[in-house]
Image (tube, rainbow, N blue to C red; front, side, top):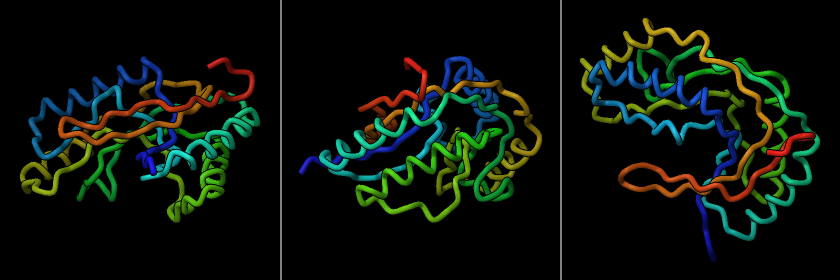
Length: 195
């Protein structure tokens, strides 16, 4: 059986990617070696991580999502704020936040529901919309951790711009030593959108 590691996400505009790239460069200039920064072209807004899923189920899911995507209108969100999971003092994931409208949460809920129809477990944690910039390595030194923590506190990412979400995408994720490769498998336009 053909199994694919997959996720569903909203792709970012070139303008937002440019802003995120500049922010990552600021972090890189601090020479913090303990963070694996995400390639700018791979940064996206995850709606649902599916994990390893067989091709037949992905085809079923695509049909469900295509039938539901037209129920949602395009919406605008603001990219702003920065932090880390679980917190800035003990960062594991560096992220940029979103001022997310109710429409984003409604779309994510519909995607979650569609995935549950093919047997994907519903995410127990609440949806926390964010854009992952980097992941802290397990071998981080206390000095690098302190530098990163201070940078997270002092750097500003108050307004990186606005973006219109007019579609979402089902991606294949292939993990490679040089970084993940994301391949679009299907696009789902929102109502009135030609994307």
